[in-house]
Length: 185
Image (tube, rainbow, N blue to C red; front, side):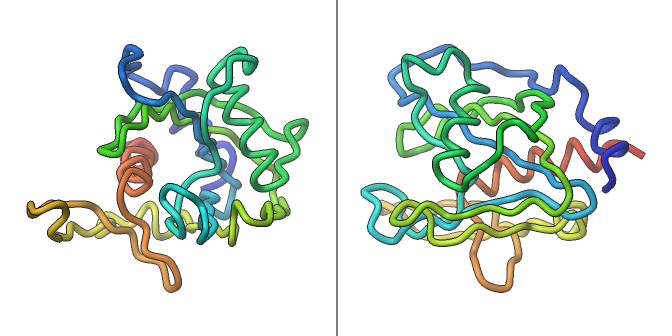
């Protein structure tokens, strides 16, 4: 998808559902889209206290001084992957998402320039990689899987990637993004 198609697919008022604050930990993630390429993801550090080694969007806790959800997502992406915020354009927010592990995630969608380069923060991010628009726009993706967790069978989405299983909250937010992008001719 080129930049014009992304702008048509992602109007300024993307989100239909902002969830009220509750007993969950407020966090923001950056859904960084590179025109002509795809969406940028991270593989979290193996020694992190939560979600170690999992695929995620760059992001984290909303701090009191952030000023906005978008500011928090940009700050976290700068810290985690070396995002140049001066070359990043915020397009809007997608629907908030509550995880089973107690996080209230606000996804912020942004355009990054073609050929962008990222640097993973040592200890926090093991790798930064791109999931192509080809995979994201393929109606056969993602696939539904089942597994037992905490004594119950659960269903969840999994996106194909040759090196990293993409599942959980990240997979659901990618599905939400894919549905927005697929809806535009």
